[in-house]
Structures are given as structure tokens and as C-alpha cells.
Length: 367
Image 1: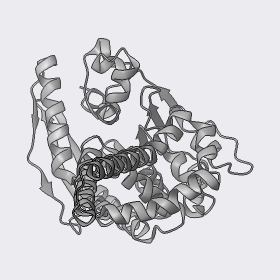
Image 2: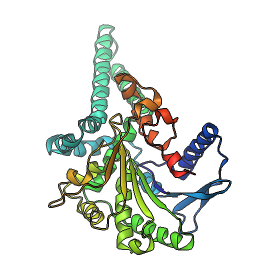
Image 3: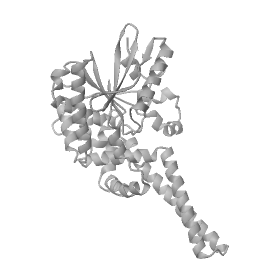
């Protein structure tokens, strides 16, 4: 399995722990003799981290984490002022230039999630403005000198702004906006560094498969990693993977947000990738999403979302699963408050009665 994470700076160590934990959970539940090997860096430019999962009497499964987390970190501004300034341009496109309506056409939930950072900032500013006003009125009634009162108001607003930033990071608002910002930049064709990385990763996969070929090869993309997966699959095709990986390569997208990039008219390179993947012979591609996951485009055909002319395809194979039942979420409030955790549920194992017909770990490690 060659795995592409979403827009996530945490890198291979986080996903090694996550997958190892899920393998141990499957081992505990099933009684199978599964074992997880140590994570090791790959010598090919250190862009592939690998670990193996084995079982007595069965072939090992090689987990390969494809690094683009360093690119995520380079597009991860830490300054609130930078994010606020860039948010003005992004939400101008989103609200005034048709972005919201394009995305809402395919998923009202995703379109509303796109407004979440803006609404959070507006509420925070309103609270800070109210605090400024209340302190000003109380200070005037108490006869506080104007200079001192101004210092108190500025201090209060500064402290309140800092707390709003910390809360935004804690509940995922800042993370979400950074992801929106990155996808928006890709949609403006500002994707040179990612394109270069994809070309290198494609070469490395072909070298690795020539050295130690796998009986099956899965290319898996989660969240924003789904459009990186599509780019990589197209690049593999350009580099001759049809012959090198004939009959072995299949694609799997989990909680994908392909339409977030596809709706941008300037994302011509990405549209070309999708068009290339649609050409015969097509790679097997399964797309797993859930209507409980408001951060993905549930059951949305990526080809329809970018209106590729003259392309009528039943591709990829769309599979909807009920994610909420895995965590026992039965109310709308519980569903909304668990969205970020729920978005990672595709990568976890679950008891057969609660899996909803899909379990990544069980499928990868099928006897």
C-alpha cells in the first residue's frame, strides 16, 4: 500500500502509530498472529517511509507512506495576520465569484464547512468589539483616564484575540482554513512544488516495484491526499506504469475532496490528470465516502464536478458507508462535534457489525 495522507504536517510517525494501533486492534479482535515491523526510511531520496505487517504463513504487507508532508508544512503559515489577510482574497472568490455556489452544487455540507472559518472569525470579532464597547462604557462611568482606558481596551482585545486563536486551533478551524487556502492555491495553478514531488514519487514507486514487486499494489489517498493520488496515478501512467504494474495497480480514495480542486477553472493540469485516468484501460478505482462526513464529497463523481467536456464515465466506483455508527453518533449535535475525528474513521478498523461494509485494515490484511 502506497499511502498519501491529507493536508497534514504530522508526517509518517503519526500515521505509523495510527496504522500500528489499528493492526493491534484487529489482532486483539480476531486472534490472528499479526505483527507490525519497525518504521524505516527509504533510501530513495527519503521520500518513502516503510513498515511491514506480517503473519505466520502469509506474505507480508508493505505499508509505504509517501511524503508530501514537508510541502504541507511549507504551506502552513503560523501567523494569524497572514491567514486573516489571505482569507480576504479567498472568501472574495468563495462568496462573490461563485466558489460557494460551485461547491454547493455538489455538496451543501462541504460548502457550509467552507464558511466555518469565516463565521468563526466574524463571531470572534463581534465578541471583541462588544468587549471593547463594554469596557469603554464602564471605564467612562468610573472616570478612568482616557489613556489608561485605551491601554486596558487594547490589552483586553489582544488577550481575547490570542484566546480566540488558541480555541480556533483546538477545534480545528485554523487547520480547516489552512487546508482551504492550500487547495485554493493549487486551484490557481500554483502547484509547481507538488507537481515536482509527484513526478519524483512516481519514479521511486517504479524503482521500488522493480526491486521488490508486490503481488498487488494499492495507491490510497485520504482527504486532500485523494487529489494527490489522482495526480500520482496519472504521472505513473505517463512514466510507463501500465507495463510495469500491469494488472497489479488499483486506486482507493477515502473521504475524498476532489471537487474542491476540480471546480477551479485554472486547475487545468488536474483536469488533464483526470482525463488521462479516464482513458482505457482504466485502473480499478474505488471511492469510499460517507454522508456523515461533512469534509468530503459523498458519492460525487469527480468528472462531473469539473465538467470535463464529452466525458461520460461511470468512474470511479462510488461506495457510501455509514461512518457515524462506528462511533455511536446518533444526534446531529454529536455528529457536528465529531467531524474532524470522523474524517479519520476511514483509516480505522471496526467490529464487523459496525463497519458499514468497509474496513481498510481488514481488506489490506485479508488472509
